[in-house]
Amino acid sequence: MWKRLFNKKSSVQRKILTSFLLLIVLPLGLFSYVSLTISKNTLKEKEITSNLEMLNQIADKLNIMASDLTAISNLYFANSGLYELLKPPQGLGIYEEIAKRDFLAKTMINYKYAYTWMDYNTTLFGENGFELHTLYEGRKIGIGSVKDEPWYEDVLRADGSIVWISDPSEKLIPTVDDNHFVSAVRLLKDFETGARLGVFLISVGEGFLYQQYRSAFEDYENALLIDDRGIVISAFDKQLIGSSLGSFGEGMDELEGESGHFVAKLNGRNLLITYDTVAKTGWRIVAYTPLTELYADIGKLERLTVLLFLAVLAVSFLVSYYIARRLSIPIQRLFISMKKVEMGNLQERSAVSGSDEIGELARKFNSMVGRIEDLHDRVLAEQEMKRRTEIRALQSQINTHFLYNTLASIRSMLPTEPPEKVDSIIVALVRLLKRTLTEEGEFIPISEELENLRNYVRIQEARQGEHLRVEFAADEGMMHLKTLKLLLQPIVENAIFHGIEPKASPGTVLVQGGLSDGKVWFRIRDDGVGYSELPRPEVDTDITALAIEQGSGMGLRNIRDRLRLHYGASADLIVIARAEGGTDVLLSLPAIRGPEELTA
Image 1 (cartoon, helix red, strand yellow):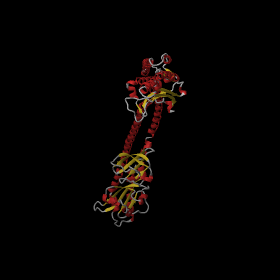
Image 2 (tube, rainbow, N blue to C red):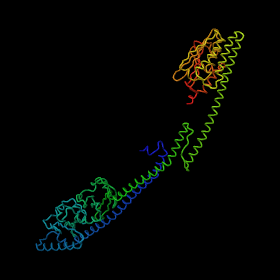
Image 3 (spheres, one colour):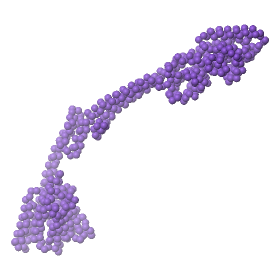
Image 4 (cartoon, rainbow, N blue to C red):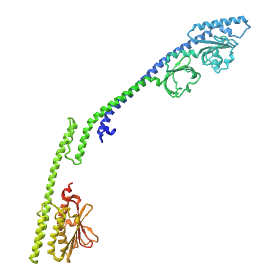
């Protein structure tokens, strides 16, 4: 599918599409992320501010409660009748004792009615065994039970000041009618003697404390009320009462200062913790809000943002893809046209049109290719003309050289040979000239080239007599193939004039030819004197460069140049000086049926 969407090798299209998407998607995604983050932080800050204000109000309410309980305690503390009851017994009669109890009971009831908004209970333990409760009328609990509690020493050290105790004693639960409660405890002493008279407790049940803050919280929120030791004295979850705040989870023991906030993890949930201090008692009211509930509306916004982001991404992709294709397809077509021109097709023209820069580039490209094609055709024509001129010049050199040597041979024979022999040589020359000089084509069949060479050899054999013998050994399967005319004659001529003729004894020239691996090859071998510039080599040696450069190598140089002009690098000429004496000239040509195969 990806290949169908994108043109092959169209990196421009991918870059354009990627750039469009990056310019659209990244800013949009970054904006969405920043917006959601800011929204979360704003919501969190608002929740913190709201919770702290609410907790401050609850703390004020609990401070008022603590102040009222302190005021009630002060009323009892200043009541002289109370101290009379708590003094050591002086033999009072039973009726008088009952009267005092009734008086104290009425006093306690009056004080309770003075603070009707609070649900509290009072308890009095005298050192003289006197014991009185607002609510409880059962058997005596006894001051000894109070003295056994660990907080009693704190009460003694307070020396009449109020000490706030959570769940003072299980034995006091009947006096409060609640399983959990807090008490404002103070020591009663004789003003005159300073002797301890008893202990006075004002107790408030956990249910009453719970009512002071429950209505301020949402259903998904929770709250705790802890004492100055970090022990829970009231909570939404009653099972938490009596446990330590630090045992709830990581970070829950970070309450520093009178108020504050932090994020902690409890039971795998991230919670926003806010807290404030009840100054009168040292308690802290702690609220914790699940962040998942706090961010519930943000979650809806996140989902909406994601859907909107995906929609914008899809639209952006389609629009970017359309624009990228509109821009890249003309470039791709122009690129394909350029590749065709690079491969040599100068007739290619780009079909891209338009009034933009790409269309203008295509028109300039077509104009440039047209000019290149004209220049190419002109250069080819000039090269062809130059090549033909060079070929004619080389051919002229061969013809002139050939005629000069042949006529010189006939002239040397006139004084010594009979007219009939000279006449036969002239007839052979005429035949040779008729086939070589009157033909317009540069290429002739190998059979004709060998026949022309035989005519030339007849002239030289007639001139040399028994001193020269030329043998032919050519493969019949190559006779129909084409070769350059007068290709072999200059080589045989060199072998005769520079190899056999300087030799004192008779010599032989062997002309061989054959086919091998799609190539036509010729070997012209003589057993003459070789090259006088070189001593006889110990092994067969390639002397091509020396043979062509020396004065007698004009024919070989001419042949090499003709081979290069017609065949290029596919033809080769090698001259070998043999260790046994004599010279080999090797020719290698492409096996062709006509010159048109060289340009195919």
